[in-house]
Image (tube, rainbow over all chains, first blue to last red):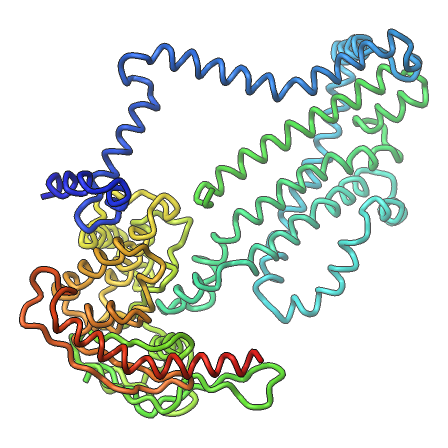
Length: 308
Length: 264
């Protein structure tokens, strides 16, 4: 029966065949098509495979090339311009010198110590922000009276730059770790909080209606519909917060720190160790990049169901 | 009678307007147990409001709705709804979507999966259990939604223009399928549509609504000697179709006039 109807729908016009997927007794052609696609994806589809592989890897190489060409150009310019004295090499030493300085810092163990100090602060602030902001955001997004009450306050603070408040934090919490972690916590909390609120508020009303029609009470509705629906949006906030945790870090470490990449950059500048300064800058941007990549991957994992 | 609407009216308060908006006025309608009743009316006549009231998602302003003689007071698993936009949970697979209502009903986990599987099979989707909604075509999504509503075994199936978003071929095949499922399960079906053909093809009776405020204008009994072959080519299909069309024509004109007034 199934094969007959599959044949019948394939024999019709192409448009009819493509409708076959939703024909009552014909999920078969769809399965078949899937199998064919799978087979060709795995590359065991007989002749021409080697050629296809070759073409595939060539395409991959081009893609990688396209993505690195701008960075390579920047590196080349950074190397060449100071050497030609088009820019003053005292203030911008050639990249190779910076790399050597970076290597020396690494070998002496200093770089590791600074990176560790920075990472501990960043991650502590980031993690605390997640712990504080997600539940708060869920609460504000779900419970409208609370949202009405807090909204003006949220509007005020979200528009106040975190760094503008750094002196306040230092004043109240002192120069130690507490104020540094607090300012990172503060900066990270906002994107998480606002995205969580948006995620909860943005749940498709039809899904809520559908769940309500099946007799779900508010608490179960929250657990089974609101929460899972909000996860991708919440995670977007978490990813943004990850970036902030590194961005704010440097500024936080410029005041009263004895270690950390921000301290390293600042200290190197004061002592006119310009290559060290650039080495610190490069380290922090690589750190930020890596952290972001990690979070992007996690985000993708948590929202595979999102329609692409 | 399975379902009774008795003098049901629904008004909405509209922001900025002095008079409330009357969506439904004095609706009387009886649906027999095991019947397939289609409800057809011009757009904006309150069809969907009627369904919301029966689903218990909103309360009528006047009158009452009885289900097995008991007034409807809230949503419940004795009624299953199928929406036009499927309303599947995108983070759940097809199987897990069908299990949703069973979770709400506190069916044990193992039995849930078994039942969900059998209902997916009923709608012709075995083999697609692990697909997410975005990996399915519109027609398949609606099949999942139908399976979900059937799985918790409601007495009544409420369908709100479920096939309106589908292309013509998919729609026809799903209509056929739905009739098969209805015959097999013996559910009472209240099917809302704005398509005359669909109403005549599916319904044992077709209830025609007036334009806003919606009331039941007429109920037509639809009977064919045989449902074999191309029903739509049957001369009686054409007669029924024309009858509903005539009943609706004035209402559609009235709805247009109303719209023109409110816009102008």
